[in-house]
Amino acid sequence: MTIYVEILPKEGILDPKGRTVKNALHQLDFPMVSNVLVGKLIQLEIESENVDEAVRLAEQMADKLLHNSNVEQYRVVPVEGVSK
Amino acid sequence: MTIYVEILPKEGILDPKGRTVKNALHQLDFPMVSNVLVGKLIQLEIESENVDEAVRLAEQMADKLLHNSNVEQYRVVPVEGVSK
Image 1 (cartoon, rainbow over the protein chains, first blue to last red):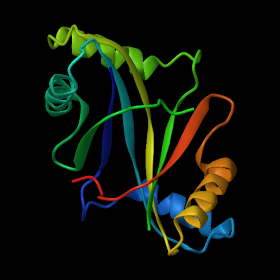
Image 2 (tube, rainbow over the protein chains, first blue to last red):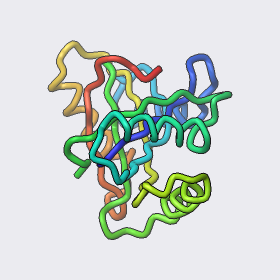
Image 3 (cartoon, chains in turn blue, cyan):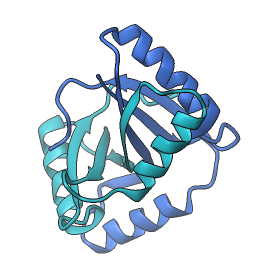
Image 4 (cartoon, each protein chain N blue to C red):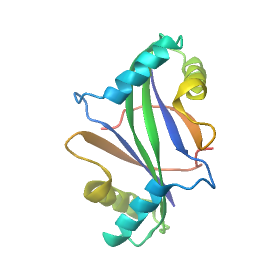
């Protein structure tokens, strides 16, 4: 089972990477971009047939290792098709 | 409108970060994790009321700036609720 852990900077936390990307996009003639956050996407393959169990395990992994709760928030999402 | 650009290493490309995370998860007693990929999640706020237009613009941004087509693949996803 494929699970995404989507990690982004918490609201109110300065995101210098996001600001840099936004500025670059404006210079590339994308003025319609009003905000950018840059985070991490972690794709987990979990040996489980049960979606709820896989999500619960992924949340434990996020809490114990994958995300920094001081400055990041995360969301766990089961994936149907994997990104191409 | 909020759009995610989900960027992951292409299939067949060595992902040393993913391997490191997998090993760490095994040591933390998550043996059910069989593979890990570590990529980027970019959250874009695009001033547009049209989902199709926002997705098309985000694809242009991914092609021109956000992803490295040599080693990465991406997917553009409109977001309903933003990650908490």
